[in-house]
Length: 258
Length: 313
Image 1: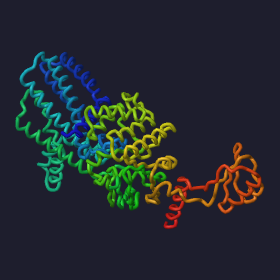
Image 2 (image 1 turned 135 degrees about the vertical axis):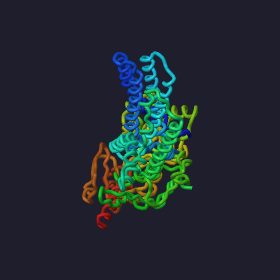
Image 3 (image 1 turned 135 degrees about the horizontal axis):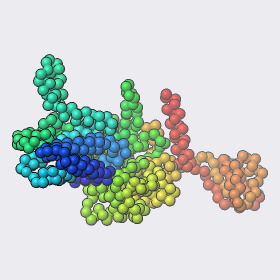
Image 4 (image 1 turned 90 degrees about the vertical axis):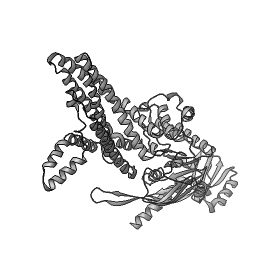
């Protein structure tokens, strides 16, 4: 990573920290400890299942909300407040700015997810008193959640590069919801006929496939994740994020900062 | 080599929501700024000053035309490392302290390590903010932010400094300090290009100025050349409080201040006035032709260009 990208990324991370974005960890900690104590009292033999399901879903949801609401302002806020003027009048290329912002937000989300992961494992230890081999798959589920964050970050940046924060939020959140049901959309496309089939197939392949990135339920049941899925999901998230980032850069390169 | 070379720069915006129509913000602008000079870019609000600066900074793309700074293309990162820019009414990351902000900008400009810390400290002292280096910018006043803005523009020791309305938001002392700073920059051999609508600042500082109005360049030249046009009047000052009757009858405007009288008369009447003062044995203190001020020149230019625009419409 070049110096300027690293500099922009670290400043984006610092902004998130100073804007108290990481305070969500407190809410997460309260939620998880409450849940761990509660399920310990009311569940029989399914404590781990509940804690993993609840913990990982919370990690995902908290992260998605941060990715969308911080991501949509990454470019538009800089334009609106004109902080971008003093950055782009320096030897900083526009693509470096976009990439720097992406890494900054992705870094914030990874740190956030890491802290939450510690919480999830802490809660697991509390309810089960020891770790077992299948608990290792929780790490894979966390990795997939981080891949999800990277896609959402890049999409939020893409929308932020040409749209207002409100519209960007609507677009990004809609894509997240549709993407979550992308498997159903693909099944529907397979069953549909004629024009509907074409449209449904196009949409199914265009929206991010978050279904494939969600292995929370199977991991909670102690089922392993295949190495093929890990490789496929890694490549998919990388390619999808890169394409969204390229789109953001192409739009931003041509944008007049009035 | 010119410090700044602008060749036919044009900016046309599309305005309107449904039916877009073109609006010309800048007509073909041709302008050269020499190295080491303080150049004033004058014009009323909405004249096209900021649009021109934004195009030079690569923030807005020109519709046509080109420009070079230090002989290099506007998109050349090497050139950008040698320029500094203060936008109009700057806003900075307010969660950062003044030192953190300057370190951030310094790194983006390629300054690093111990050199960066030393420069940050020195530039904060230069703009009069050495004691608030550790204070978050959200606690700064408008004038302090303007000083931080100037600091970030000169931090990396650029060869050309662009300042958009640098005196905006500053009190009289602050304005004086910025003027001194600009003169220091010139003494260091740097080129200063600044836009303003405060004409006294331009008159006091600039080697040359350009006047822009309604997106068109109206005049460019040395301040002394633009204001050298005499108005056909002379100002005569003499001691005492007496105004001879013959001077009143030729239509002179006279003001008695303390123990001197100041009269402005037409050039052709100056001998009559001198004779009258000799007759009354009044001592003449000074006799100078009345010259056009930059403000008068500016107002005159604006009126003329508005008339032209009106007649064309």
